[in-house]
Image 1 (cartoon, rainbow, N blue to C red):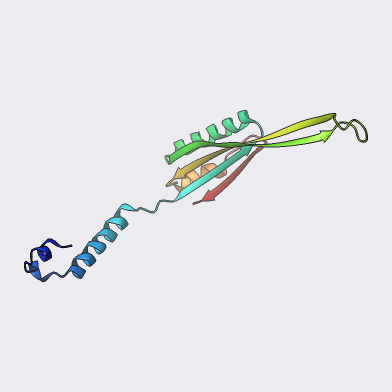
Image 2: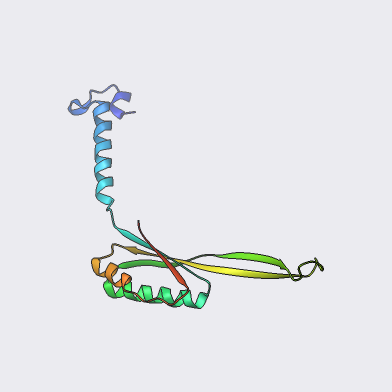
Length: 139
């Protein structure tokens, strides 16, 4: 409620409640548009079976991004995906005798905020070790 209505005073400067609410909404939208800057972002998702190889590749990616002068968030470690297989040792007898195998997939995410053309060019010409899967997305 507007204070002058509670006291039965005349409205100041011929302003109605609807006009005040409209002006407040317009001002809020302008402030919101000014504060929001649309920044381009690159998200790099790295997967590997060996944790040492994935750490080396993330280090090389981070070093190349720092040389180009872009801002970086990460590496963010994601949960390790564990896939387990249970296999019978013999084909016909000894059902209780089994082998168990496990495959672990280590994952990392790196976000690059506001990359330049040099950053993208450096990332495309990067030599990473074998066994590393890299996905690059523009977000």
